[in-house]
Amino acid sequence: MQSLILTTTTRLLAALLLMFSVYALLRGHNLPGGGFIGGLIGATAFILYTIATSVDEAQAALRVDPSNLAMAGLGVAALGGIGAGFAGDPFFTGQWLFLFRDGDSYVPLSTVLVFDIGVYMAVFGGILTLVFALEQEI
Amino acid sequence: MSWLLVYPILIPLLTAVLSYLFRNSPAGRWISVAGTVALLLASVVLMSEVLEQGVVAAQMSNWQAPFGITLVADLLGAVMVVITAITGLATVIYSLSEIPERLERLGFHALLQTLLMGVCGAFVTGDLFNLYVWFEVMLISSFGLLVLGASREQLDGGIKYVLLNLVSTIMFLAGTGLLYGLTGTLNMADLHLAVREVENTGLLTTIAVIFMVAFGVKAALFPLFFWLPASYHTPPVAVSAIFAGLLTKVGVYALIRMFTLVFDHDVAFTHTILLWAAVVTMVTGVLGAAAMNDFRRILSFHIISQIGYMVLGLALYTPLGLMGAVFYLVHHIIVKANLFFVAGVAKRIGGSTDLSRLGGLYAHAPVLAFLFLIPAFSLAGFPPLSGFWAKYVVVKAALDLEMWFVAGVSLAVGLLTIFSMTKIWGSAFWPAHPDGIKPRLSDLPMGDRMALMLPIVALAALTCIIGLFPESFVLFAERAATQLLDPTDYVTTVLGVQP
Image (cartoon, rainbow over all chains, first blue to last red; front, top):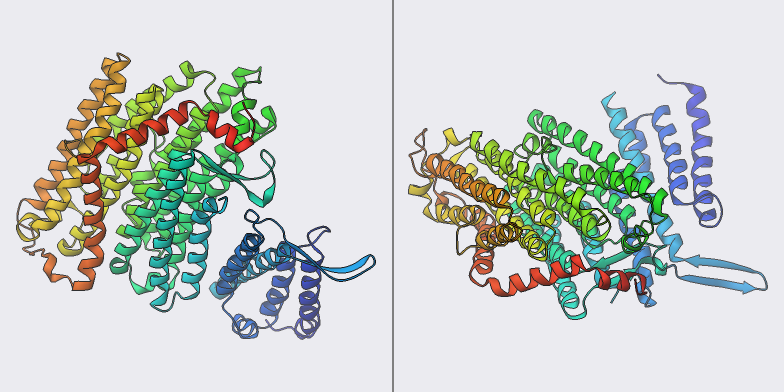
């Protein structure tokens, strides 16, 4: 069933959801948010798009196979753990880099973020793999 | 040094990712082979480190025990990782010929590597909840492997498999929760100390029995083994071989670990249950095998009967008994995976695994017949193969405790094992093929023959080596058993304090 209201709002909402998912991802670690919930929000954008249009169009918009994305996410998460090795620490020890330090303000970068990005990709890809498969069945 | 313990988990993980991304090209399967070779190398390095230094431990993320996740390897853990890598490599090479491209495109190699990761993780973890997570990883990936391709028969076996294993997982989780409530820790070394402070030993024994049931399902102990013969004969042979070799053994390993390190407060009660469960498991397994008429089904039931011997070694709870259990674990993984591989080749050239539809293997494929005899005799406990020493040690341990009945039963089960092996021999190898097929190995293309026979020859050689030069292996098993019975080294290495 095609609904004009849904397709029109989806254009807006999907973009908003994707943006918000990145915000949730970056906000994570010390505050509520992180890779898992970010990935879920991001997946919602594409699920909405799938419902409004079709699996094929959503797949075309995503460009890559979501299951590849999920597996790559697993690899990225592992890389986040491997990073600790270069500093001589045990696996998964968080490594931090504080950029642009100016008084109290700085940009913290860490291997924890790399791990979270991996989780984001794994959740995002995993959920979409499921949804695409289910939608195609119907 | 702490990274040595991470590699057995990390290497299969990265291999799984890469082989999945390249699943549509031949590169995927070669990545899988290369990754498993790397895993074998890493496990050998870990083994040599453990042999030199004693127990090694690593604290993940630098969170000190008992708060973070600890990875730890003692001799038992390290040898299990090595044997996992060996079996994994054999399976990957075998699957080069057996697994069709269709299954590879669905992610066969990624699932196989994830399974290896779960198994290795279970062997090196020093944290009970982490062990639970690895069990989940194993369950999910093995379910995936079991139903990959989704034939009706596979789904039927897969549902039984996953349902009964989920029950076990829930028991495991419930037991973990109760144990945490009672002691406030889940680090296994810390648990070793904490359970000594517990006054409510009745509750502790109850928890011990919950764990016994949970791991008993995994290990296919009587009366919890029904899922195994219902599912192991349905997937591709490479998959049943690695399942038969490794999966139940993880359950046995968990039993050995928990019932030496944590639940040793009431040995008279808990280990007596284990003893009788082991005896009944041996008998039912071998009787079930005698009643079956399918190559792989007979072998599946034999897994159950052999699990009995390992648990018997644990239940006797003497240095000799545990030594037998360790020896048996290693021996059985090699032999059982090998027998499944042979069954796969028989199916490939003879067209079936049903014994009434097989024949002529001795006349037309004598090499295969010879390679079947080695693991078959080893399984039954013929000298001078590895199975003889494994059985000898366990039976000797029972005799030392003057348990005549138990020792007698385990000898009788050995005899019955021979009976069902002769049954396979008598219908698959000896008579002519009922359909007049001449099952020749030379009919297989060269590449296929190499990929199928190489793992079989290598594993058969391994069981011969263990059988002919048992001293160093026996000494090793003895050291591993000593470590299990006196975990001081384990506890001090993990916690960094004297118990």
